[in-house]
Amino acid sequence: MAEGEWLYRLADVLVPVGTGLVGIAGGLYGAGRRSVQREQKIKDGFRAEMMALKNEVNESKEALVEQFKESFSGLRQKINDVELDAQKTFVNKDDFKEFREEYRDDMRDLKAMIAARKQ
Image (cartoon, rainbow, N blue to C red; front, side, top):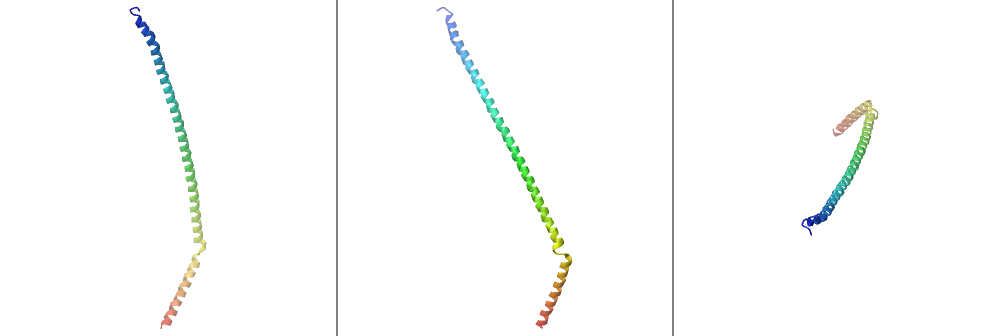
């Protein structure tokens, strides 16, 4: 072999090996990058779905709260109406006053009868 020829032979071996290693490293980097991008797309998709579901649940919850609020307001109003009607019509003040006077008279008479019997 000539004096510098071994360098050429070494270069003939190392250059293809080096280029192969660089190619493999580049391919691994690209594959890893694509993998990370796919993973991020999946995460973003799940995040978007979670937000959509959260919004849907909140909207449903708000609708239910509004329905219950309307129902309870209606019930409260009905109770108030029934109470007012009962106060107006069930026991008229004049009827109650008359009953009270009759009751007082009856109690006076009863007390007088008891007192008369004790003597």
